[in-house]
Every structure is written in structure tokens, then in C-alpha cells.
Amino acid sequence: MKYAIPAWDLTSIPVASSDEVFPVRRVYCVGRNYAAHAREMGHDPDREPPFFFMKPADAIVPNGSTIPYPVATSDLHHEIEMVVALKSGGSDIAIENANECIFGYGVGLDLTRRDLQGEAKKLGRPWDMGKGFDRSAPCSPLHPVSETGIIDAADIWLKVNGETRQTSNLNALIWSVPETISYLSGLVELAAGDLIYSGTPAGVAAIERGDVLEGHVDGLTDLKITIA
Image (cartoon, rainbow, N blue to C red; front, side, top):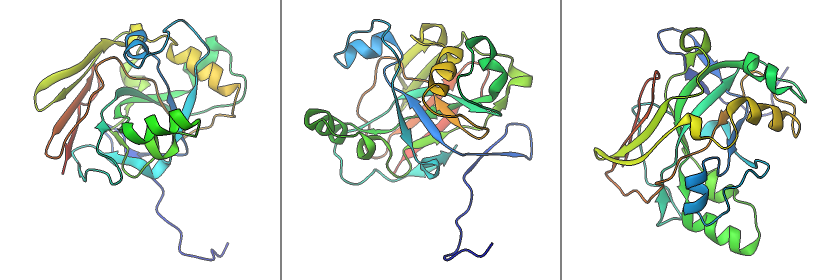
């Protein structure tokens, strides 16, 4: 096959304690998947069907990076999340089979240009430029499920400059990871290489130039990112 233009590098994420990397296909994000976060964003936390948005694969940022404060915003927010990496997929996956699709887990940040997202909401427009911008998806190395086991109850937190901003437990997810995988597979065909950012707890807030962000999920490598 001869490409009309030079091909770009495939986005990948390191696998912890290994020389392997995980190739990234698509990045799905679950919106408002913790009740307390739904409330702080002004929404009813009742168990409504989940909804999703996407980020481009090349929005992934490796652990330890210093990233520039993004353009076109004055209200950049942090959202800490557990990332679920899939080794297989399919359509209409049964909840009881969903965990079989998981390769492993990581710690991720859904960085959000909140002002652009808010304006899009008011105008009834897509969130893409508020959510799917350059370097908006930092992610730690992935830990295979063969080492961690299925993670369904673990503390998750985010610190900014050493001060805790977000804290919860994964058992507080409105839609569990297996339920999320099952529901999403009824909308699109999932495949190996897909990532799912599983939702953020309450406490989202603005970050500034010079801030150091540290994200944690029990049993996984901590994520550390600096805003230039």
C-alpha cells in the first residue's frame, strides 16, 4: 500500500512492568458517571442511560509530561478518571461477559475547556472543542488485568499542587464498568485498542499555568502532569 502522504505514528500507551505498548484505537468517555459530580454540574443523578463523547487517540499524553495550557480557553478543568483498555470487543456484549474484554487499567485525566463546553451546551452544539482538543487525555501506564484482577472498588483521587481536589471510590460509579461496556457496545462495535474513560467524581475545578496534577487509583501507577 502506498500512502498519498506520510503516515503518522500510531498512538500507544506503555504497559507497566513491560517493554510492550498498548496501541490506541478509539477513546470513549462516559459523561456524569458519579452522582455527586452530576449534582455539581447541575444535573439529576438518577440512573438515566449513560451518554458518551470521544477524544482523538492522539490527545493521549504520556505520564510525567509537561503540557502547555491549551489555546482558546481561560477555564481549563481537571477530571480524574480510571481508564479501561480493551483487548477485544464486539456488538451487544452481555454485561456478564464484559469483563472478558478488558486488557487492563490506567489513571487518566479528561482535561476540559469548560468555557467552550458551556457555550456549546447553551447553543445546543457538540462538545468536541471543549473536550477533544490537543493533549486533553493524559494517561498513566496500563496495568494488565492479569496482574490487578477486576477493579470494581478502589479509591480514586486527584491532587493539585499537593492539595486534594477530587476523591471517591469506584464503587460509586452510577454505571459500573461492565454495564458501561455492555451499553456502549449497543451503540458502536467495540474493538481491541479502545479506551474507556469511566467518569469523574465530584470536585472538578479550574487549573492554572504551573499547576502540578497527581492522579491516583488504588493498585495502579499514579499519573503526574504539569501544566506549563
